[in-house]
Image (cartoon, rainbow, N blue to C red; front, side):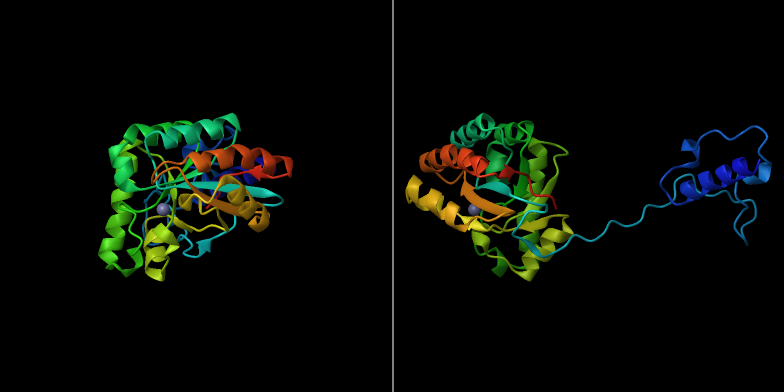
Length: 261
Ligand SMILES: [Zn+2]
């Protein structure tokens, strides 16, 4: 009997803490005393029943600090692809990632998501993560009013979700890396962490595959985040670089991961 009493008490305590509802509790023994099957009513409110579902605690606030390294141990690396989705080049980037069996984070521009919703869905369907990269790729975002900053982020989220309802967008990346407290705080208020990088391939300047590979191999360390582009124009060099870089980093002991907020 003692064991049964303890068990009944435990069941209620778990339910009261919000991890279970009472309906989820295991059936109690038929001979358990009635007073152990339900808690006494709260003082001053006779007859009231406890709520079936305790009110949820507010979610923890999103950290506003810049993320420049991925969470985790060892030789892990994250690849990020910015400024898409872009016809032809996003498809080709997806092919490279699939051939090499890695996942990446696509920092999408809202206007591009609006114009190419099927590409948004294709990126999501392939298991890659999404990052909000503002509606118009405004590199002066931090100089805008708080309302304008929020609108750039919210509109992008709206178009991503119009294309792919329910897809999580845990990240924001300021165009040009032009961060500010206002930008990072606004992103956090929309449940997005600010995703920076550690290695910039400068691929958009088309410096040549060898130069880009050299940059990455010199600058990359464990938990690094690599920046390159699937959007913004033709990306032949970027894709040629990735075809070599991914197997090289794997051979060097790196594992590609998605950053965790
Ligand atoms: Zn960009």
